[in-house]
Each structure stands twice: as C-alpha cells, then as structure tokens.
Amino acid sequence: MSFCHSDPMAIVGLDHLQISMPLGGEDQAVAFYAGVLGLTQVPKPAPLNERGGCWFEEGSVHIHLGGEENFRPARKAHPALLVSDLDELKAKLATAGYEVRPGAIVKGISQWFTNDPFGNRIELIAAT
Image (cartoon, rainbow, N blue to C red):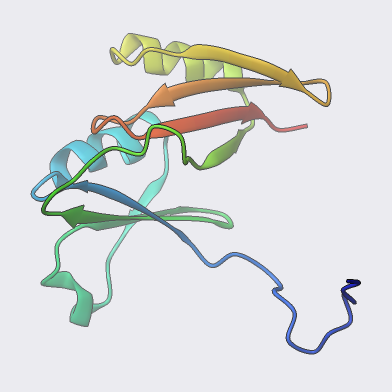
C-alpha cells in the first residue's frame, strides 16, 4: 500500500505531549520541568484547572502533565527532547540528584536518558 503526503487529511505537526504523574505531584513537576529542564510553566485553560496537573512550554515543545489515580511511570515510552547544550543539562541534572544514563549512538547522535521525579523516562539528544 502506498501513502501520498499530499493527502488533504495529513498529520502536519504535534501539538503537545501528555505525561502522567501521581495525583498531587504538581510541585515536583514544576521543580523538575521548569527548575531543572528550564521549560516555562504556562497556565492551564480555566475549564481544565480543576483536573490538576501542569503545562510547560519552550518554543515548539509543549508538555502537559496530568495526575493519574493509579499512576505507573512510563519506563519505555518517552519524550525525546532536543537540547542546545547537552553537557550543561547533564551537569544540572546530576547536581539536582537525577541520574543521567548514556544510550546508544543512533545515526551518529548520542542519546542520554534520565527520569523525571515520578520515574517517567526522558530522552535527551544534542540539538545539531
């Protein structure tokens, strides 16, 4: 089967990525995603505030964290974030007490992994 990219119903981008966290984990999320990763916390729309959670943005990166009652961390599924100064972020993560693990080299680009405070896997890739 062949797919044509000029299809009028084509996927054209990614609006945001939703990541789960335990209910009530907003302070930890802010400390990690804003404080360590450097994303900007943005207000959630009023109709969604009662659900808890928090949203972060930086440029075209939009990450939403939502509380989940029976939370289980995503150990395999993960966002892969492009980082302008990977060495600086790795040092910042280590200073904040987060383990940074090397991954494979794929297409000449090295992968690094960490976990957010809830155990969700986060991939870090040097922006080229």
